Image (cartoon, rainbow over the protein chains, first blue to last red):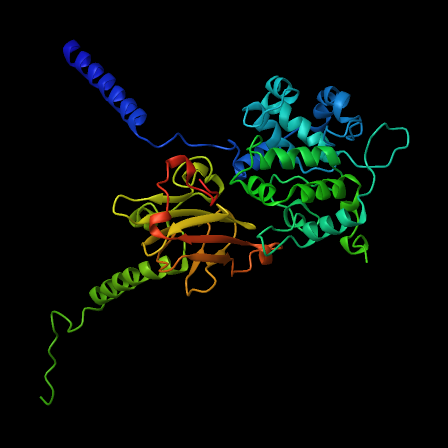
Length: 246
Length: 186
């Protein structure tokens, strides 16, 4: 009996060793996974279960950089107001799993539990965006020049069919949203530009099925600046028809 | 006695048996029909093999993880192209294939119904979420083909197109597994 058990244990070890050798020997690289988040109904339910009041208490820590009203004082720090809860939830989960790298957000996200994440997200989903002259927010920034405004309006509203660039507003609103996609209407220009450049240079690679890495790489440097200035100046809040210069 | 009444032990037509046979035939005939209309029946999915994929978790495991997308050379000289259609992009955005070689296309959708077409050819591949669409293509001459989506898929549909580059067979580079996607010069 003991002998048999011994033999089966040996056999198991041998099989595991052989399997791992086979895995190592195969020339296929390991799967490159952009993010462990998949927007299944269970994921969406887990992300929506948060307690906004507890989230508000936890978010006092976020206020230092992201502002007490969700508007940051520095242009490279994102505004968190007006963004869908799934979008913030996904980024926090990616920071937690180190799929998105940040020297500031990495350690902070590491210290959060899954429950903390959904609570904070619930709070920011309820935070209204309102004008406040006392606030030291940097949003909105100065308007782009006419050339950039025209380029950005065209790309945001229509994209570029010749090059296969879809319009920004088809996923980032206000025309349509997809799960986990942030609204850009109240985002800072420098932050948008930094993210576009990071996606184009593959230093940020946590977009599921790589839509943003593809689109950011198709855009020219000038177009990336134009889109960033467009959103940073608050033009994304207005209907596109009023912003297209004659 | 004008008319002898004979009670048969067995009726001529066994309706019960006939009904069973007809029902069986009907169910068997429905199998290809469900395949055509893409009705998701777990038993059929099991019988059909591995054509079913989870559209929400393509990036996590399986055939459509991002480093497996693009053109893969097969030992017999043909190539396999794997793509994802999503709102409003085909990924990878540019595909490189050799001319005059069978191209085995495997494509699936991450969200809505799309249709991958190749301008200047008759090829059109319907792409549905949850299943892998397969097609055998061949491009005899080198050239560049625009590949727009021809199934309305949402607000950015009209800008959804990618590119297929067909290069002469001798110019087609030997691809390492990590450089399958894209058409950038190597």
